[in-house]
Figure 1: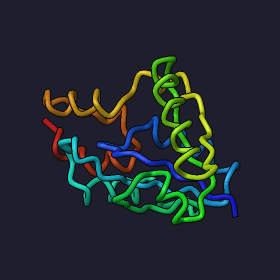
Figure 2: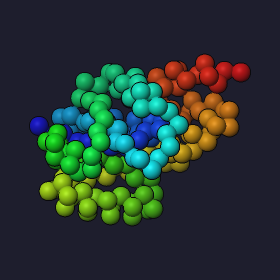
Figure 3: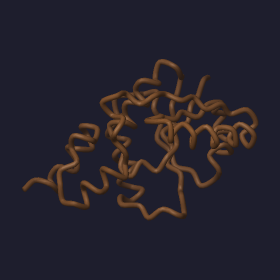
Figure 4: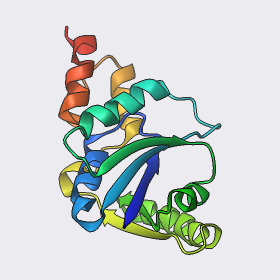
Length: 159
């Protein structure tokens, strides 16, 4: 079974994240959207909210599993039997950063390969950081979020 892990904080899950997972579905038997715990981050949404967003977004995808983990991502992959990490790349800076991490994950994860997908052009400017700033500014972030997440959050931004 070909299992890929798409790991991140997804604070919040964006249309860009959704697009990467949906485009990768034909490549893998299972994709695990995995929420890691980064102790250096102050999350905007709770873990429960972020998990709920992923469950809503991928409810129609039986190949997608939602999970959390508390270890190095490469070791989590080993624990699951996942041979692949899935990463979205928006620009050259993303590639430089992700390529370094991919090399380390291959060593630590004993052969875990990182599969990079270029972000679709219409989502290339979207990041969770930008979406959080839009929310903090009191504006409606719906156009940057998967439809189920936007529907869930919309009452908070209806003026």
